[in-house]
Image 1 (tube, helix red, strand yellow):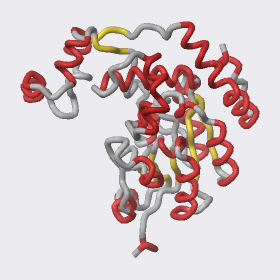
Image 2 (image 1 turned 120 degrees about the vertical axis):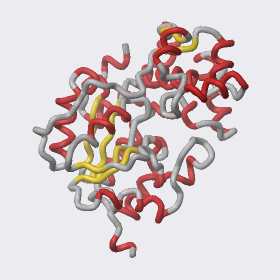
Image 3 (image 1 turned 30 degrees about the vertical axis):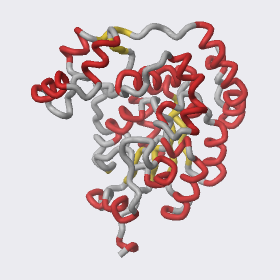
Length: 296
């Protein structure tokens, strides 16, 4: 029965490449928190993301079954970053299924840095991203029209202001976190999260591990092809490495076949700052947060 469903009472709605994986893994260490092992079900925007990301849940019963093991927990939630990109669809469906008392959380990152981080992550993991960062930025609108991977929307996913305003307009409980603060002092940020969720904040959390840490790239195109495309060499390698610890994360490969990414080109940074300027200034006004550092 629908009335017997265990429903989430909080949602982490984004932003992508803003440490949401680390935040998720810290949150689930709290004894009063339940989040399903499928971190990003994307249920409330399933119609928008279908076929454009690897995993999503579009069936109502399947979605709510994800939360059944959390029955009795005080804070039950999930984290789907596309709820920020497709905020209009997400808000409509969240209100329909969960009502307006569900607690909304988001963590926001300098959109210029977020774009470059997202590009490097996709370039490392997705063979379809074969272009330079500058070329990929030029291709973004065409990729949007062609319905290619949403994670290649490096600029679009950094436009926060309209989404933040819409969530604030529709939900009385919205908690905004900032990526830089989270990286500098995750314990302090999590203390604020636990208080927002009405939980004890004096619980031990292991903050020593960082998930989805970026900053690496393949040393050359041939190695990238060998380890990413479907070829006999990669099939052999898979026999020796566990599924959840593939070649892109194994220490041997990261040390021998990868290198640190180069800094963003100054002219590209300048262009992106101008692209995001109006949105940043509006976000600053909405949140009351000094974001002048994002414009430098």
